[in-house]
Amino acid sequence: MAYLPAATIPLLRAQRQRVEELQRITGTICPHVFPHLGKGRLQGQRMNQFTKQWHAATRKAGLGHVLLHDLRRSGVRDMVRSGISETVAMKISGHETATVFRRYNITSDDDLREAAVRRAQFGHSQPSKVVALAR
Image 1: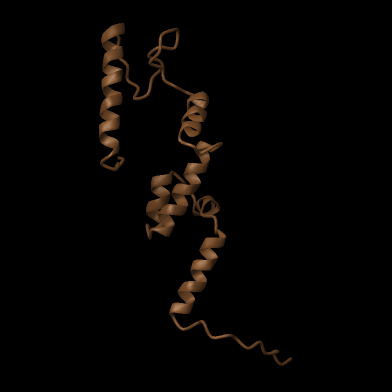
Image 2: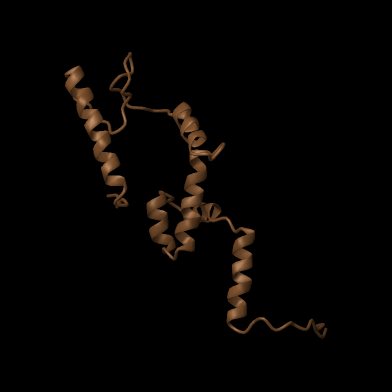
C-alpha cells in the first residue's frame, strides 16, 4: 500500500499509458511499471538499473551529483522533523530496525540551532553558572 501525493497520480497514469502503448506495439503483456520503452533486446523488460537516466535527471534539475540513496536519508530526516512517528517513518522508508533507521536520521548544525531556539522559548536562555561538584 502506498499513499501518494496528488501530483504523482497523473505522472503514473501517463507512465501506464506509455506501457499500454508498448504492449499494443509489441503484442505482449508487460507487468512492469517502468520497463525499457526503447527499441532493442531490452524493450519491455524490467528496468534494473537507471544510472545514466538518474545522472541526466539530476543534472537537468540542477542538483549536481545526488545519489538515489541520499533521497532516502533526506526522506527520513524530513519525516522525523515533520513530526511523523518513528514507527510510521520506518514503515515508509523500509527500515526494519530502529538502529539502522536512526543512522539515517542525521543531526545537522541547523538541528542544534533549532534546539537552542526552542530551549530559549521555554526560559532556558539564562546563562548558566558552572559550579564544581563536591568530592
